[in-house]
Length: 364
Ligand SMILES: [Ca+2]
Image 1 (tube, protein in one colour):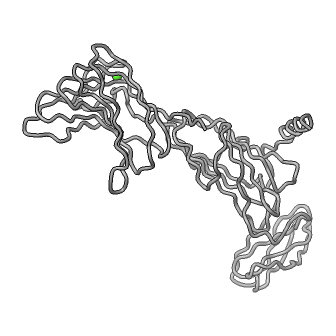
Image 2 (image 1 turned 180 degrees about the horizontal axis):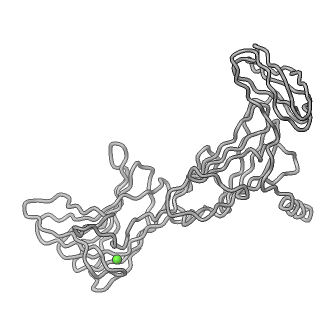
Image 3 (image 1 turned 60 degrees about the vertical axis):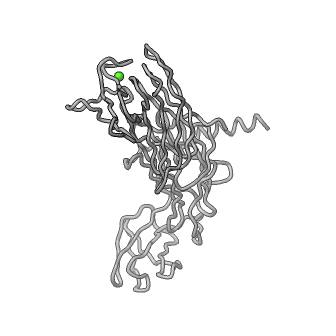
């Protein structure tokens, strides 16, 4: 049995079809009255039908001469109707339902099928997306499928529709994506059945290949010397508060880093930026710091519509003369907005550089 399955696997690869012709030619006719239509048609039409306004199908008489089919549609066909000049033997006319997507696997990980699947943060585009698309009555029309990445059509060979043993109503779909820029991406798939009126299986897969922390090295500086990506704030200040938040030369890498110095009064000082996290996921924050005081720490705040969903604080940093690596792992709940803060809540200076955030692979 095992040998036989292996052979089947090889056979699937061999007869995979990169680009196919659509299985069914449907003609849509718009008319406000009785109309006679002539269209090129090869080969000769057979068992032609048209769709009545009530959705039922009627036989259509077609004259055929020199590669051209001519037919007249009665008023009862309505303003817009579908004509099938050739009805293949396999066509099931009473098909009302779209194909279903099943058994979705991304890079070897099984995922729950939903109309929209969010992969969250990924280092690059997924290397392999595989699923089964299955119709109850008619073949899957791979040749009429459309695949777009960020609104642009993917090349024909990006998707492989492998036949399976139990008939043309089921196909295994394998998708290979090209390299992508660091950004938020959406892969959209529309795969029809070859029913008289096509229905579509639709699937959107979203993923984010952009760095979760933007300019973690503090190298993007405006003309006034402040950071492009990081906002500087002082929370809960009082009349005596004296502090400095600035981008200074001499980073762990590159030219610059962030320096936060508490001098006097109420001190709650931060550089922050919003980050695109996904609820239910875990993240690893990494970076480098130096500190003369003990006020430095990192926070992650998750905001809901009206209130904070989560307020996570890493342990305070110990004083360190030289650049010292730090790591902090945390998990987030679903929320509207996530903000990362590099803080100093005391006297003395702390310097931050090369801050990066990555999603921790799920272990289940
Ligand atoms: Ca730097």
